[in-house]
Amino acid sequence: MTGTKTHFAPETAPCGRKSGGEHLVDDDGYGLIIRDQFFDCGCRRIRHEYHDGSIHLSAIRHDGKRVKDPLQADHGS
Image (cartoon, rainbow, N blue to C red):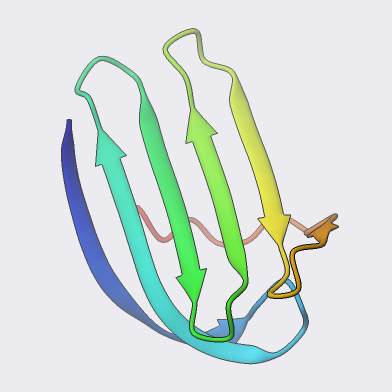
């Protein structure tokens, strides 16, 4: 799998704070794409696209609590 890591400007994290962080993208070239955002505050936003086309989205606050997070802009494009 090939992966890239980039920094992103502050945006609203799952906890509601404005925070920057790192955006990681891994792609196996066959349809599996893993996109993770790691915010400086400790929150995380996860998007996994699988070979069959299914997508798993989740957001975790810096205190470890899962939250229902509205869809955000796609930073991988």
